[in-house]
Image 1 (cartoon, helix red, strand yellow):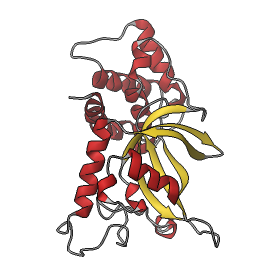
Image 2 (cartoon, rainbow, N blue to C red):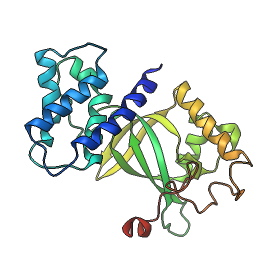
Image 3 (tube, helix red, strand yellow):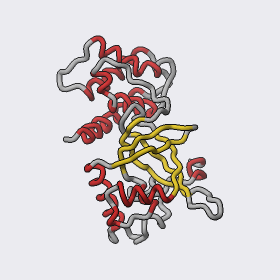
Image 4 (cartoon, rainbow, N blue to C red):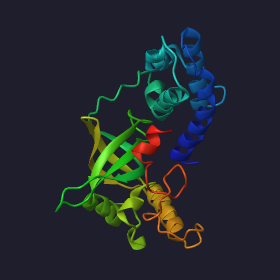
Length: 244
């Protein structure tokens, strides 16, 4: 099992656990319980934290104490701890990401076409999840021009031969140097690991399969959003989100 596969397995289990800690209050009992749950997921069988490591873990989750949280918030914090367990192993509190440049494995969740000025190349809003690094678990918005998206698809993703449309960046993964400026994610550099290229190719092949769906549409022309089809590229439109 690769490191990323191990992370994915632990995160899947964390998703189930998070529900038990969601609610109207989060006090000492819940904090201790959540620390224990994270330890069970990350330590080898019969492994145990020493005092310094246990304190580092508690300090990394201390900000949750004092009020209730949704299941999503609990999961996000478990995600951050699990993805940064190296800090806990070294007895260090996990730093809070302030937006400074970091390296992270990321996945492009979906795209939305932005209104564009006449004569300018189209721009897209992308939702991007950070999978590793001190920002792990966070979903950020990014704005990219089609030139940058096409460059990624043709030279970085491993999918050049598939002639993907720019919208098909949705669902693909990369390792990038990113920063957060005024609430928007900025990409300073990106490259794909062999494993990321393999997954990107699998996605491109599925989207290119004429038998993938009854509608026989290209994914970038299909009206389905990412909540309606696992191969979709489009984020739900903002009106749909507003109306639930």
